[in-house]
Length: 93
Image (cartoon, rainbow, N blue to C red; front, side):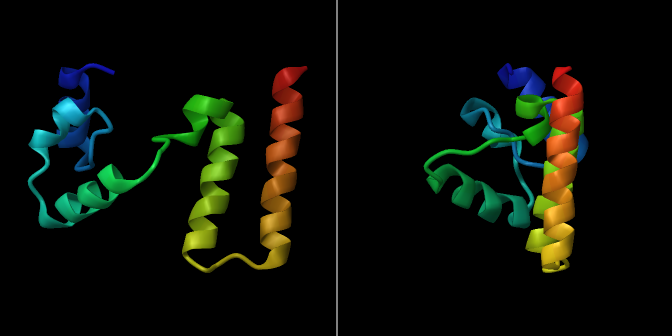
C-alpha cells in the first residue's frame, strides 16, 4: 500500500501503518509504544485474511484473539483449527 493509503488507514482506524514511510502519523502514546515493538519485530503480517482469504483469515483471527485473551480452552482451539480447515477446503473447491 502507498504511504498516503497507509496514513489514511492509520488515522481512520487509530492504528499503526505497516508502511514505514507512513508511520509519522502515529501520535497516540499507546500506538507509539506498539509501533516501536512492531518495528523491532523480525517480520509481521497485518491481516491474516489478506493472506489466506476472508473466511480462513477471519477464523484464524478469532482463534488468535481467543488465545491472546486466554479465553481458549483446548476444545475451542481445536474447533477453531477445524473451522479453518473447513473454510480452506470449501474455498478451494
